[in-house]
Image (cartoon, rainbow, N blue to C red; front, side, top):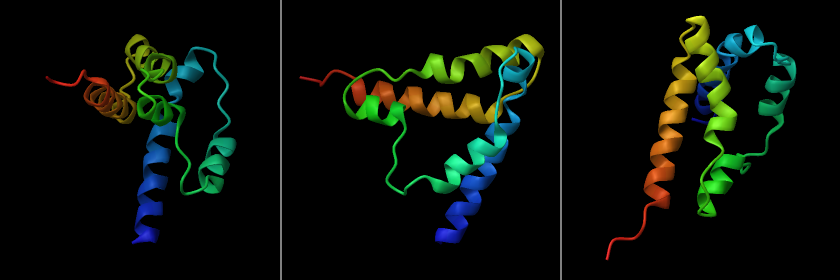
Length: 103
């Protein structure tokens, strides 16, 4: 099962890395090797800044992280389905997690 989870993460990273094309067209520099090394060396319990924000009751910096890829994809006509899906899932989680308690 662990090997399968790693393979799934590798596929997801590959798809998201491919979606850096809009950022590259906008002038960003992306070090794909560094991204892969970061993923390979990340501890199992590591959490992203967005996960930490949501857990602490703060809005995640979704636009700052995913926004440039989403907007760049729109400007250049490049589909970014993995980033779009990830942004949608984070927003849904943040909305649910940060929703005021019902009386």
